[in-house]
Amino acid sequence: MSENGAEKRFPYLPDESVVAVQRGPEPGGVGGAYRAFGETLRGLKTTFARIIEGPVTIQYPEEKTPVYPRFRGRHKLHKFEDTGLEKCVGCSLCAAACPADCIRVVAAENDPDDRVSAGERYAEIYEINLARCIFCGYCEVACPFDAITMGHEYELADYNREDLVFTKEMLLAEPIERTPLRREGE
Amino acid sequence: MSLPIADTTFVEATWILIVKSIVIFAVIFAIVPMLTVMERKLLGRFQARYGPNRVGPLGLLQPLADAVKLITKEHYRPRAAIPLLYYIAPSIVVFTGVATLAIIPFGNVQDGFGLYGIDVPIGILYFFAFSSIAFYGLLLGGWASGSKYSFLGAMRAAAQLISYEVSMGLALLGAIMMAGSLSLVSIVEAQNQIWYIIPQFIGFLVFMVAGFAETNRAPFDLPEADAELVAGYGTEYGGMRYGSYALAEYIEMFVISAVAVTFFLGGWHGPGPGWLDPIWVIVKIFVFLFLFMWVRATVPRVRYDQLMSLGWKVLLPLATLNVLVTAILVTVT
Image (tube, rainbow over all chains, first blue to last red; front, side):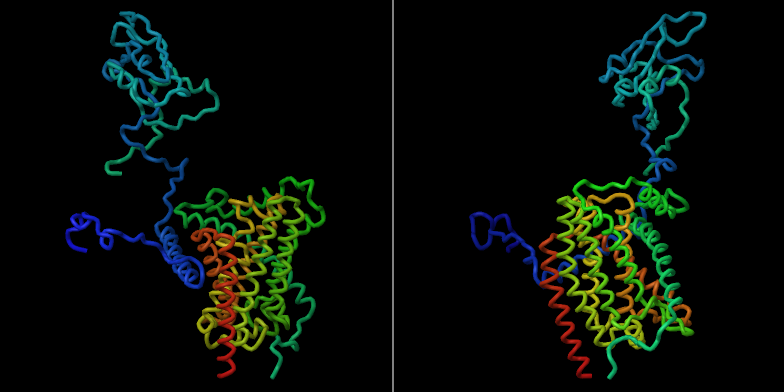
């Protein structure tokens, strides 16, 4: 073969352009048994290396897989930290953005003496049916006040479908921190 | 020249033999649960996972849970099965496995007491006799189940065992000729200079490969190939009858390892005082058991025609050649 392989390939030269298909030796016979033995030893080496490496399993209920900061888990509703008022103004944009149609918002007028939210109106009922939610995060994107964000919690299994409908109080409550966060570079 | 059999003048009292057989039963039924948990843990490690670690400390009580589960299961018999044969087949394999263990020497005669079940005059032929009977357990179990998968598995088991028993016998013949005796005790005694794994390396290899086939373990677990035969001869078995087959597989594994240790790894020979002899045997046996599990974790199952051609076209000629060369060398020297 010359250094300039591309030039050699054209025009067509049968003895230089044809590349023979590489095939292994014929199986069977004493030679085959010998090669199989060698390959077996190679395989034994490979599996033994796994013992030395140690298990990679995460013992789930005791240890948990850390999640990334932008992991989309269960939703959280937020309040203003200084005034303690709810950020949600009951605009239903999240419900409109939801492709799974799992958010239900019923808005009500704020009483000026006893405000619930910072805006004109507030969400009287705010429910997310987590049995239907696909955790796409569109509600978070749609919200003009950053009132709803996706949290990190993913252990949401329950025995009844009714228990998976999360009300406003449950979404506002600070969730028990159960999910480890992935550290930098992990 | 004396006959190539065990020392028939050394006879132990009957009550000693009875005690020994009880001890052998107790020991093997204590070792097999350990083997199951060892196998599962090692397989886990070979696959970069933990294996059972929930039941008891480090998962060591797992076999207990398994046994309770198997024993309390419903006794079920397919309508097409032949009752008597279906019921006794699993016990045949267990019985033959334990019976073979009787001739494994764990130490020499110390203070007039042999550390082995019995040193039968025919020695290793006893082992072959019982492993041949063991395959009736598989064949009868598969046939009496009245199911096509069981039947196919049993047929395969029969073909496989017959093919490999020949090579296995020939592989051991080299060591027998070098020791000049069939008795396992004399064979171990003859290895006090050099372990037979060195002069009989070909025989050792052939014996190990045939041993894997004989115990129906990976990569030769065709009789119970779960991908195509459901579970082979054990398809219709459940509960402790299925458990007996599993038990027998582990016992056989232990026996094959013990025979390999006796014939090729110098049995009880090892540094240290006399009371260490049985420990040495056990340690060497566990090295082989580790090998069995290691291979299971590594090698995929071979195809049926590959199995047959390996047995007849490679192992048998190799073993025969080994016997011939050994015979010539033994005669010349």
